[in-house]
Length: 177
Image (cartoon, rainbow, N blue to C red; front, side):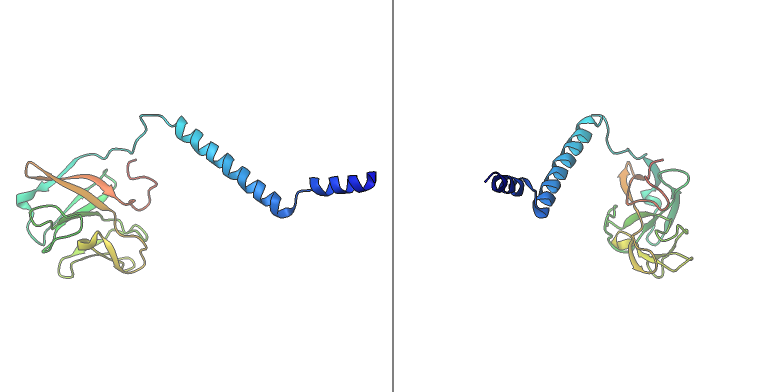
């Protein structure tokens, strides 16, 4: 009888594979939640997204339809372009929302793209990726897998200013160095 009780006791104390995996998964979730909550609570209260510089690009009155203005943003190592299209654009500013700006570094390999007003596109000379400035720098065709980072613009006292970047500039872990 003792051997029968030991056998039953032994069988009931064994953990089946399925139960073991459930228990292990639950323990992992609990541990992960605790680590995440600890990381969130230990983050400094003043930590926030980096702020972009405000850079004057051009006087609104000087930007004609079809024109382009090159500048560097958010720093001297980041070539950018402002264009005034003949139509409203996603993210555009100005009276007809046709003024947009983008990083000039192609998202495929970092080559400098150029604006082709007759084709209404930004074109990379290295591998022929083409981007649509009217549609937030979306890829039309080519090797690139991401749209061009769009520079956030605003108008202050008749001056177009760059104030941020939507998307990651090629070759960077963060846009603010």
